[in-house]
Length: 480
Ligand SMILES: OC[C@H]1O[C@H](O[C@H]2O[C@H](CO)[C@@H](O)[C@H](O)[C@H]2O)[C@H](O)[C@@H](O)[C@@H]1O
Image (cartoon, rainbow, N blue to C red; front, side):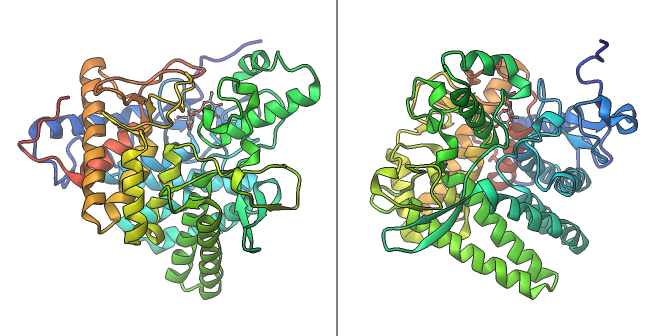
């Protein structure tokens, strides 16, 4: 057998809209040291830009890489293909850069995946076709539209968003649940269409399953592993019945707060886009869908005393309509419990925001260098002490949109801590990292099934997005 060198299928591409010093770049960054660093991060888009090699387009059956037509941006290091939810933060950074054409071409590639598969794959490889990832396509489209006012862009994107909405709200992804007052709600869950070892981590999964004795238990476990990869949080004690035993992953039995927030955002974005292009019926339908999901999120996840939205654990995975029970509420603090604050319906409500700010403050998740993913020291990568760019971003952005002063200050404080740790680690190691250790400023993260990766798409995107939003004053020190 003859194999090409890894990475030769996706080749370097010079982005057409890249400039070394773009005019109007990060106008609120006054400090020269920070501006210089931000320009270095901006120039990393050049390193991470790729296009599919012609040999793959000509003979797609010979490759695992999918023959995407447009140039794209990869996360970096071992992640040499496009990843779905990473792309949202990459796009937010590209918009700050500003590289609108590069941002649009990422979306066009993702749309082509919906056309072909009916959903967006975890990543653009054939072996990722058994699952998706946190659905953020609508957020990508609406952010690009906000900057460009390009009506034809939303016209081209809307059909894919409608298809994607169906994927997350039908079949195995859809769960019906009756609340304590007798109302039936429809929510979404992660559920991979796969019950074998993940092809990209085949030997690791086989080994993890060794202690399971029968084939049925093994198949169940393999589905849970792949479903956890669909959540983007692979792996975390958040999904485990027993925090020290990976084989107790139970992701398909959990109604996740963050997934349902992203689907709510999808519904609101679709309603807005449909209205913008004059499709009144679709707009009304999705406004109703968003109202129903907001009610479901309040009823099933929100705990008003604790000021958090908690994941809900289903007691039995096979019922047609589940019955809500107090014991199903998982009252452990995870960063995902604060993700709904991203949505205007929640961040415009002062009483909710006050509770959330108080709760986040006392949760133990707020650390020296940002928000920890969970409080569990498990050595899994989506656990303590790791902090991840997408989680800092979604919470900070939500808090910053509130009109409450204490929420705004908290948002800015977290953003400053996060920018500082990214800066210090970059100066120390010469690179941007996939995740950071939030216990102290200037440390990158670890744990999990692969060595820490660098590059790195979503970290670059979030630093640029934070600097765009908050700026950096002349006299504020950047070092730890
Ligand atoms: O190969 C192991 C796993 O790698 C990916 O997961 C991690 O990296 C992704 C790219 O940055 C990121 O989207 C994900 O949140 C990370 O946990 C991949 O997505 C997994 O499916 C894969 O099994």
